[in-house]
Length: 135
Image 1 (cartoon, rainbow, N blue to C red):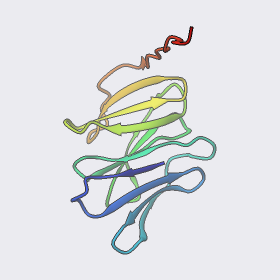
Image 2 (image 1 turned 90 degrees about the horizontal axis):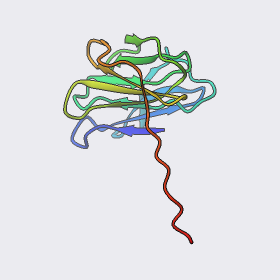
Image 3 (image 1 turned 45 degrees about the vertical axis):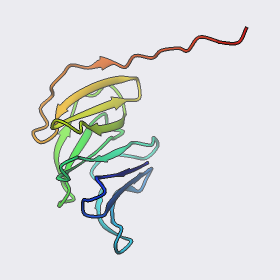
């Protein structure tokens, strides 16, 4: 799983891998500059994301939580509890300070990215089937 922030910001690149945690890389030096390892990621490909403001990193986790880190620190700011299953997806809203998390069982939750406050109750993600066009 790969994520980048705005092209004019800091030349940072974010990677996350099963059993290897989340790493932030400096593309000018091609070196890992920080690791984020408080979340659990042993089996499922849990995503990570950099906030549009460049201050936060979010990561999914197999402990049914999402984590929000300060980009300058390896310790987490918020552990977002009480998800129904493994948090596979996290993404920041580009227009407002919000974080959306998605779980393995298809549930979504919305949080305030800087405070960790939950903004919505758990909602099931809609799955739409495409009709068979061959006949």
